[in-house]
Amino acid sequence: MKKTIISFFGLLALMLLQACNIETSDNGHLDGFWQLKQIDNLVDNTSVDKRYSSTSWSFQGKLVNLRSLETPVIVVGNFTHENGTLRLSPLYVEDRISEEGDHLIVAGDADYGLECLLPFGFSEVDEVFQVEVLTSSTMVLSSPARRLYFRKY
Image (tube, rainbow, N blue to C red; front, side):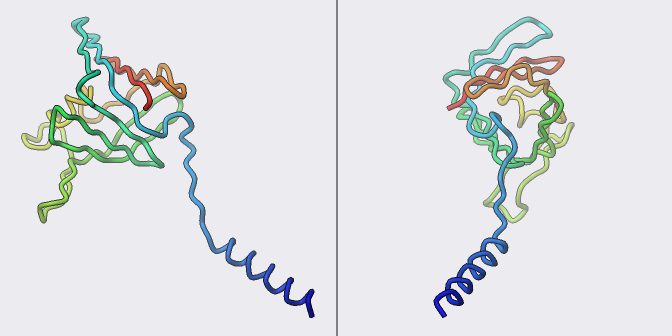
């Protein structure tokens, strides 16, 4: 009788664990909060110090969130990180107040275009970044026009 009860509860526990779907992230060092420290403009060889702007990119699962004290705009979206590249697309301006909801960022849009992404170091809406450095504390991304330096916090 005791073996039957133990077997029953063991089988029940196994079924419960089988029903659970634990989702994990395979992003490695990319997951977490990254502070944008500096933007180098590779076209005109200038730099912008962003250490005091509280501009951050955060990654979790397949989602990215961009925030900055320089702008009230919060950008959310998806990303892919593969073969040494990082692509953030599609991106949306978060709008939880209006009935319209979030707004897709589209090149050429007067209200929801590239202007929304400039504080975060973008030079075009659908930008693909090369991952030059990615460690547990440092990330450097580059595109043909920009190089972005981050620290993890």
